Image (cartoon, rainbow, N blue to C red; front, side, top):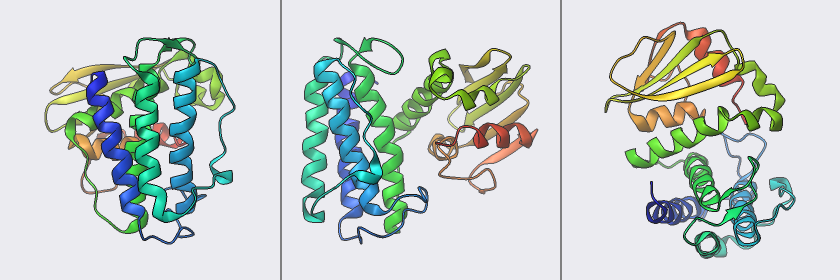
Length: 249
């Protein structure tokens, strides 16, 4: 997705997240984030947008905010605040080309816009689930979020940040995410860490998961389980289970 498409997606997802929680008890649980209440979810979203905007604006690192210490304020202001914070990040990122600090070294500021689009898309689903509402995501956005997530998980720098991801190493086992549109992602678990590549059509894999690209996103982000009838798993299910068990954040 280009910078304009990412900006549109961020505005859409943040507004949908806040709107889903309008009228919800701030102390209600968030089933997909068991350690959080609704106020933590909206507080984290606000914090993350402001924090990433500061990084994009200054180019310098600052402490990662703690969602459990967030104060989202009056629920009546949530939608307005989220819209303002989304616009603040978009403005700070600008054309997306300025080098700024990231966990993975100096990268163009576009990194933080794309990262927040992915984060807000998944948390928008959390918000809808907490509020007992249905939710949908555009196929192109689902593809973008899956790809961004795989880029992070297969980056050598990620292992330094989260050493437990060493469990994703393997000896050539493969996991195929295969969308019914034909789009696919083939993950290969190598001795020095996992890699992935885009695929089209059927390819051999140790285990394959098929479904709509949207449902593959929810599986990949663990908002849907492999037992859900919306996805079909073939091959060595233990490889998929092991991957999901070690990519839970």
